[in-house]
Structures are given as C-alpha cells and as structure tokens.
Length: 190
Image (cartoon, rainbow, N blue to C red; front, side):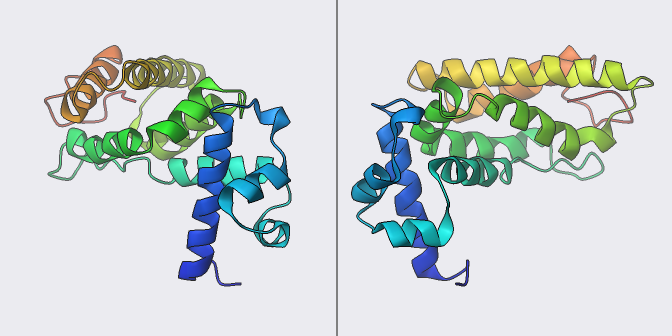
C-alpha cells in the first residue's frame, strides 16, 4: 500500500485520533486494538495493515511530531522565532495529542525522544569543547521548554502562540549565554 495514498493517510489519521481519544479516559496498558478499531470505525485487518500493536501507533504519532521540529539556519535572514511560531501553533492545534504524550502513561520516553531529536537537529550549531557540557546544556534547555509547553497546555493556552514562542526562544538562548536578538556566531545555543 502506498503510504502517500489519501485513503491510507485518512485511515491512519482516524486510528491516531482514536487512540488519543481513548487515552483521555484509559491508561495506555488498558487500550486494546479492538477498542481503537471501534473508535476509529475501521476493522482489525485494517489496523494490522499498518501496525502490529497500539505501541506502533503511539510511536508513529511521536515520529510525526518530531518531524515537525523547526529548522534553524543561523546564516539565514529568518530569525529562529519565526521558525518556532508555526511549531508552537502546531502544538496548540494538536493539544490533545501533546497532552496525552506529555502527561499520560502512553510513553514515558517521549521526553527522551524529544531530547535526542533536538540534539541531533541542532548539534551542529554548538561549539562546546566537552560533549558532557553540550549534553547538559541541551538537557537544561529542553527540560525548560518541555516544562513551559506542559504549563501552557495545562493552563488552557493562557498565553498567545507568539508570546510563548518568544519566551521559549528568549529563555533558551539566554540559558546558554547568547543574546536572542543577535545573529549567532558560533556561540553555544539550544
């Protein structure tokens, strides 16, 4: 089956929505393939055409999210803030999914996956002499950002997308001693 087929994309979307809805009321370990299929209005053979278990479905949701992490080009004319605003809007638009992944038992390793993805994506922009220093900086920045996002979701998005994006960029850059208003020049950053 072609993964770009609109029908496949739609069916997978129904399955993803179904597991997110179920996770609002049930712990992950209690969710069955049968329940997912009933909620998505698809049969079990359709589920098995794409996934082997509910964990596969969660992992694909996480992979989708991580693929949307904003790119950063310190040599470009576009400030990083302009790259993060659409990602923060994506978080807000998909708040149920993020709430499930950040607050539920669906996957306790999602934070670690975010950490790894961010380190891989932005690693080339850092100039730490020590890998340990670099790792600690990323841990500090990412845990701070995840904490802000969790609070933002938990508060019902009491801050605008632009405000929370600006705050995250400002605090992340400052936490590593960089002025967020200046173009980077090989200075340590998240």
